[in-house]
Image 1 (cartoon, rainbow, N blue to C red):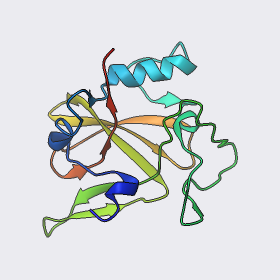
Image 2 (cartoon, helix red, strand yellow):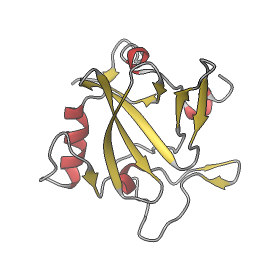
Image 3 (cartoon, rainbow, N blue to C red):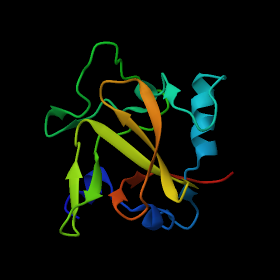
Length: 151
């Protein structure tokens, strides 16, 4: 709660489906594919998007610390305007509380989609220019949410 005003909130997949304001909705795989196709017309829905991560990473600092650490070949452009922050993710621990991890190295966003009973999410690492597709348990994994408005 203390950092939610800065980094946003973390949600389970089920919570994420209702996290957006009334005029918005969580992104879908179709939304992510539209974004990827803006930079690579050959990008296929349901795949990892090579070359997209640096276009959505924000060149951000928090308390004078660069949020995305520099790696050779990772020229952060943020020309999409999404300004993605590496705020990590959370996983349910054995004591039924969430532990937060991967701050400054990882960003994860739930989608509205599911497969094989698990929620689909998009994620990126600090040292790879790829936006990956992942799936996780709907209640024991928590990530952030990007909301979109339909035109």
